Each structure stands twice: as structure tokens, then as C-alpha cells.
Image (cartoon, rainbow, N blue to C red; front, top):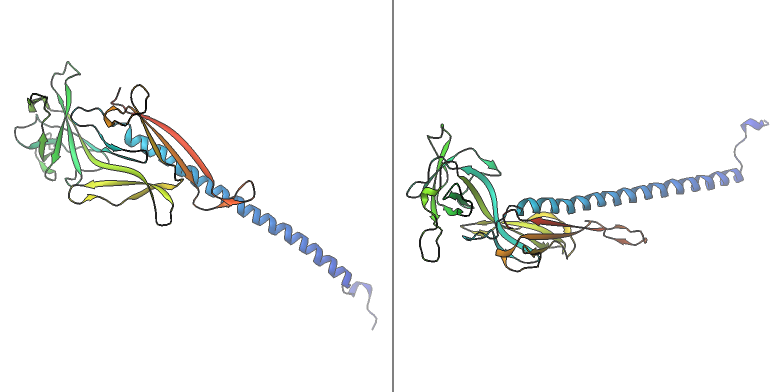
Length: 293
């Protein structure tokens, strides 16, 4: 039987041409997919890097801005290096319901602001004392250790808690009390603070992170909790300045803290020169302490 032209198959030459064209198109599509995947990975790592760096310069100023380094009864900055900072971190705000009683009981409004309830294992108190409402220079803060967990009691419209505290009465050089207990009046603010430490450290894989620790009065410093990372070995870096803008190593003289954060991606990506490596970015922020002139 004779085949018609319309029913004939492909010649070998036609098959070869088709295979070559198919290979060219497939290679182009594969290259496009690979490039898109590489670009997606690079953009994802870039976004993660930016988030890490910006998180560090957002979290730390919020923590440090309210520090009072020059408090004559004990500054909020306890220890400082270029890679770590130990300080008093305010975690809750209350108000005194009645004038400070003789003895060791402090009555406070149970309304709370900020992050937590008062925990005797971590928290201590700063109690505002206003000796003369017409003068600012005689204002001070009592430092008080919490000796019991808060308990509820009637008063202040049914919204009052009682707390046992150990007051550290401020003294002047002649040993006399700087302020009297009755200088703590109804409505005086009470700040609950804990000791915190931020520092850079390396994990088991050798990556650098910014971590935070809390101080437990019974067991000491907690383990490091990761906050931001991974970072370059040179970041974060803290630089401390006094009110004249000069670098200082005295915690009581600190009026401004410069924070340098140098971050890197968690995975290597293809760089502009064609090699594989980490993307790096950095930010610098300045924190002026509100309570230091």
C-alpha cells in the first residue's frame, strides 16, 4: 500500500532539529528558574538582614532611654563595656495609695502599666520622694528591696495591694537621712525594676548574637536569650559619652550611648562579583538618656 504524503512520519533531520530547539528552550527556562530562585533567596536574606539590624536599633533605645546614670543614690548603669551593658530595667509602674508607713509596708494602687507584675525574685523598687513640692532639686528616689509577693487588701476604692519592702534610706555624708519617709506622699510613682544585661556572644556554631540576661536574686544571672542575630563580630558595639560629647568610662557620667549594629545574613548568597558570601549591613543609633543633662 502506498502512503500518502500527509501520513508520513518525521525524518531524522527533522527530529534532530526539534531536539536541538527543545534543548535550547529547556536550557533557557532552567536558567531563568535558577536565576529567579537565586534572586528570591537573595531578597529573602536581605529582608531578614534588614529586620535584624532594625530590630536591634529599635529595642535597645527603648530600654536605655529612661536610665538615670547620675542618681546620687545609685545610678542605673551598673557595668559597661564596648560589647555589654548591665543596667536597671524598669518593668512596671504603680502609685502609692497612702503616705509611706513607718515600718516596712508599702500600699500601692493595683493598676499596673508596662510589662509585668512585681516579682520578689527579680524586682526591686524606686519610690519617689518629693520633700518640697515647690522645689525640684530636693526630689529623690528611695531604693527598696521587695521582701514578699504583693497581696490584696481593701483601700483606694478597693484597688490596693500591700507589699513588704526593705527600704534603703538615702543618706548624706554626715549620716543623716536625706529625706524622711513622710516625703513619700499619696500618688507618688513607684517603679519596679530588674537587673538586665545585654551583650554580644557567640553560639556553638561560631555566629555572633545579641543576647539578654535577667538577674534572679536567688540563683544569679539567667542563661542568655537570643534577641538579634546573626551579627558580624564587630557588632553590636556600645560607645559612651558624657554631657560634653567626650567618650567616658565612668557610668555616672554617661549622657549618651551610641550603638553600632553590624548584621549579616544567616546564609550565604551569590554576591555581585559572582562569589558566594554573606550580605552585610550596619546601622548606628544614638540614645540620649532622658535623666542626664
